[in-house]
Length: 422
Figure (cartoon, helix red, strand yellow):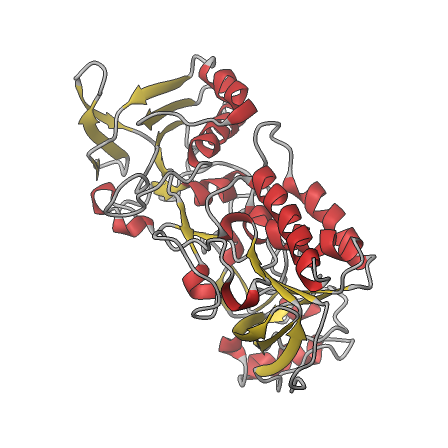
């Protein structure tokens, strides 16, 4: 337990996505002591699940690995995975944070050899691929995981399979008896970098997500295009694994809609433009129809929009489709009206991609009353609990990767000023 009245210049960063990583490494390299807490088994967040960034269509693994090297090389930065912040009390300079940990069942002795996975028989859903496939019960979060340490699913603990997994480890790294834990730490400032979650597309009933196999979301499309994804980078439709060559993308699927997400998530249009580029790169004869209210490509990214729009096999249709049905071949069929021509359409595709928006996670990842949230659930700047608590990245509102990094760098500076009395 922390001593009453103890003060600290340590900065606690909650969330190990790109914003949390950036906040942590920038603060640590400026001389601050930093503890980075991530609820999952590895760092990287949603960025680690991207196939490529826009507009250059480069892979995110390079940037993440550079940051991981910065983490490895800085003794001021401590990373705790499989952990959440259950409570924060106190004031700036002397917050007491209650950290709760979940069992990984694999210790720091793990070398990443994979023997435990080879001893596994049970398959469990793979969250890295948005549950589009499965992984062994003993598995690595993904090929570029940091820390490079396996995790064993709770579902096999206490079974003969778990014993076989333990016996397969030559390094004594399996701890089947590990229990959930909790401890307190005193910190001077807290940065909430809790990220976002994809909006639940099943709530968009007219579009038939989960009813129609070939209606997917934009985050699932990202994994289909990734070489580490469930199809090893081949863009195949889920129902029959045939190449998806005629694809529709529906913008603002649930966004800018008071029944769902009332706001614009900023990145959805650009993500769909990127997905069109994926398809055109994968299949020379691919055709992509983008159904939109209006295309929002902010700042210098307008040139990316112009480049995709110049492709004659990418068509922009100003319309919000009313519904999606399914024909006998399993093709999703879009029904609606073209806003410009007033023509009604009933068009079949190999696959439909719903451009769902960014939903806030503050209510799930932040203790009650730790910070104020706006009417949408994103964290707002507030002098709550003494003014030493800040938000970074999408925790504060929809941002793309580059803007999240800028926000995180600013949060690192604010936290340093807070703990040093600035």
